[in-house]
Length: 256
Image (tube, rainbow, N blue to C red):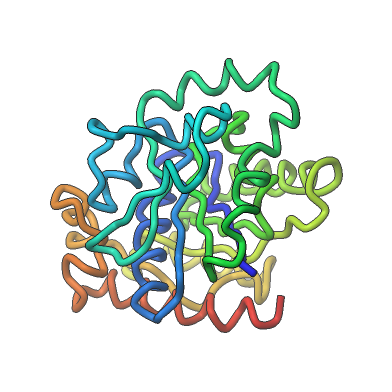
């Protein structure tokens, strides 16, 4: 059975897409069968996986509004070694069209059931807002991975996100839980980063992943080449951190 994880944070620019793409590639490198679902109309996870969002015959938009089946939308990230449900600008229109559809919050969950036996991990890259798209990601997921920077404003946004997850758990998805918090773009030279990191560990305990993703130029360069960072430069510190994170995820789901 596939374990489905939403990579979510209502704050923008915190590394959700970088985490989704690199975790997908790192899990594939560890021999896992992985499907990446790009729920962001910007399509950055699609492009970062080496799939051209401008020439898609079908996208996750067509899947959510019922125009295509999952196998018709699915494509392969040749570089990353995982499958992709790609996204582009069309997805922005899905918000309006889904309002009148039956089970609008659970369209993605219902679609993923068709491929439950084909994957070990399904990773959903959510947009940086609590929209109908993010709600679909949270309703489909068994758990949430929260990437966050160790900065003051990130702590403020975290409490809002935790409350949102609690509400979705109570009303729409009883399986939903926080799997863990991932510290990203971490600068060990910053006193603030270390203080916020210590606060997270104190408050959330073992919900904070041991893996820490450092600020890394090679990770930032990789999307312009249409490659996940762990493929673009496997030896880079950021890539090694994501490979370690993937190993930690594989171990963590054994106890879920």
